[in-house]
Amino acid sequence: MMATPLPESWRPALDPVLATPPLRALGGWLRAEEAAGKTIFPPRGARLAALELTPLDAVRVVILGQDPYHGPGQAHGLAFSVLPGVKVPPSLANIYKELRDDLGLPVPRHGHLDAWARQGVLLLNNALTVAQAQPGSHQNRGWEVLTDAAVAAVAARPDPVVFLLWGSHAQKKAARIPGLSTGPHLVLKAPHPSPLSAYAGFFGCRHFSQANAFLTAHGRGAIDWCLPE
Image 1 (cartoon, one colour):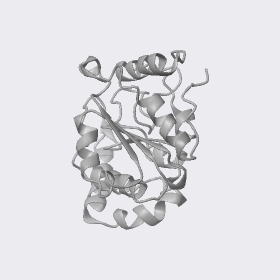
Image 2: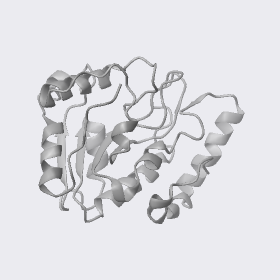
Image 3: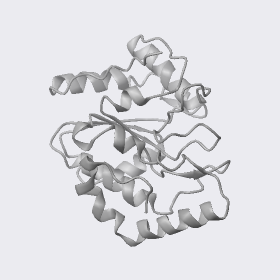
Image 4: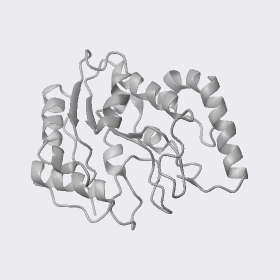
């Protein structure tokens, strides 16, 4: 179904999902869309980047996005992140503002979040592909079955994890995950960092300091949220 195989650490949880009808249908549909000349982001080989950079047993924080950026050169498989040299999108700029106000960190000049992913921050979109210039175009095509299973696999682990749920979309997704609210994890909710809603409670939520305090208290170590230039 995918050009890139599942990363080893995620296979026990996600291999069975790939064999289900929704994922098989998704694979056929994506191939047909590409054969028809549709441009799909991110490109093949980058669609599982969140799982590749953050092994299941290394997850310490989960940040859920909706779907990839739909402009050329932006999406590369991590929620909210863009490749070096690409203008920082508005929602990510607001995330940086909250980081500055919460932890006193300098505002990065780029939007590449792979340094977070390599520390155990799972930056997972709900749908892992999108058609160019058509936001939300690949929702309800089957990706949700896979990403629900990925979040459930994290929630089922005994290691405490922080779930940062920004906006109603992320919060609705998390509500489908068994055991998330009753496990050893910390679930923090706030409005989405989009310019449309950031002033309704995302600014001032202090999720980053709360996450680090929880991780430190549970022996998992703080995330270094400062991004190298």
